[in-house]
Length: 191
Image (tube, rainbow, N blue to C red):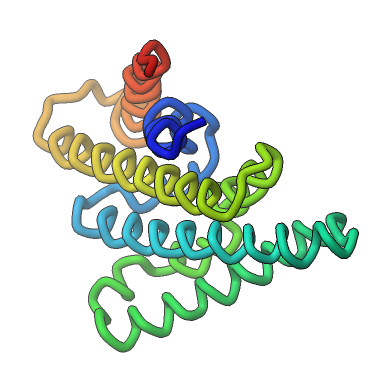
C-alpha cells in the first residue's frame, strides 16, 4: 500500500471518529466552538503523530525483537500519557486561554481510544515506522477535519429554528450520523 493511500484512507475512508467511532467523547464534548475544536484537534494531531512514530519504533525495534509483544498496550499507554503531559505543560505556558477552554478534555486525550487505537491498528496492519507515522498523521488529520466540521455545523445550528424535541444532544447525534454517511462516500474512491 502506498504512503498516499495510507494517508487518504486513514483521514477520510476509515475516519476514526465517523467510521470507527473512536474518540467520540472529545468529538461531541469539545465541538461547540470552532476555535476550541481546532485547538483540541491540533493537540490530538500532535499527540497521535508523535505517538505513532514512537510506538512504532518501540514495537519494531524493542518489543518485537525481544519477544515482548504482549507489553505493547502498556508501553503505548505510557508513551501517550507522557506526550499528553508535555502538550498540557506547553499549552498551559504558551496558550492559557486555549488550555482553559479545553478544560478536562485535554488530560482525557490520554484515555482517548482514538490515540491508542491508531497505534494498535498500525501494529495490527504490520506497518513499518514510516507507514505507521503516515497512518497517524492521516488519522489525526481526519479527527481534526471531523471535529472542526462538527463545530462549524453546531455553530450554524445555534441560529436555526430547530424543533424543541431535537435541541441539544439529539440534533448533534443526527448531524454526526449524516457526517458519517457523507464520509462513507470516500470508500468508493480507488487509486
